[in-house]
Length: 196
Image (spheres, rainbow, N blue to C red):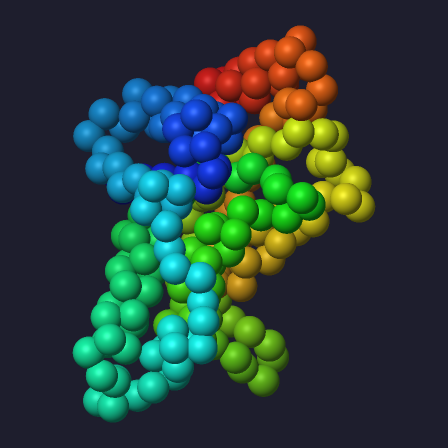
């Protein structure tokens, strides 16, 4: 079994979402002792934000790319290959100002590529990747799940569905900035969900 772990907290392993990721990873490794784990920590190893040069590299025909453009394309394809090779994806997802971390958006921008992970058809976009389970560990300072202020859950579902992955499960730890007791309860409940 191949497990891809994506951590997107700006606090790295000290983030609440990363703590949940580590708990989920421990549970998966207990079930699959021989599992291969690839960890992509976007705080310690950030994916560059898109700019005109990077987008141009994606759209330049391979035979016309210069060395720098080829390196940009190869970097993107390596990220995509990690997703393709994974049997299970574990995503740590904090909410910052009603959105996803910018470093996660950069990762998404390098993985969602027309003709590679999705294509447009007469019936709309078609994801090109095989479906697989994705566990999203969503940590929030306030209470957002199930409300109109939760822009993150539908966005992440839309992204994964767009590339062909629809088996997406969310585990929430909310109210983490609403006092120590609330935080402890929320984290304990989320970890119990992962363990059980």
